[in-house]
Length: 111
Image 1 (spheres, rainbow, N blue to C red):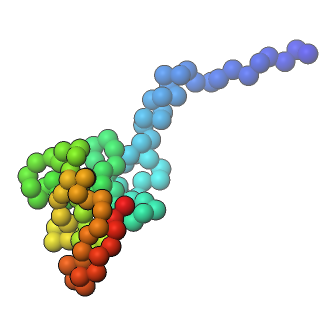
Image 2 (cartoon, helix red, strand yellow; image 1 turned 60 degrees about the vertical axis):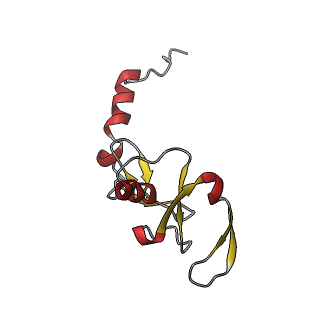
Image 3 (cartoon, one colour; image 1 turned 90 degrees about the horizontal axis):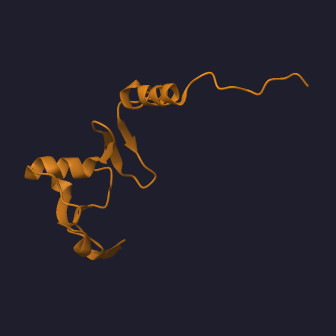
């Protein structure tokens, strides 16, 4: 029919560089590096990825990085409340189960 097939205008390397150039702070949708997921957890943009704010706060408080088997528990069950008074460091094995609320003494299950 005399029509030439569509050819990409950009090479694969140029396409990858364009994607890298618009990530993080350079993104068109950048809103300051603080986002909240559907479960209520707050994430902060670090050098190359989003990290849970409660883990960053606890890590700074104890002065070291957290191990993969450590978990940070929100005492009042409000996942956006990342004050150090509301956070408790525990193992992941202990974190799942029945916990007693320090304020009302009711027991509830953590998943």
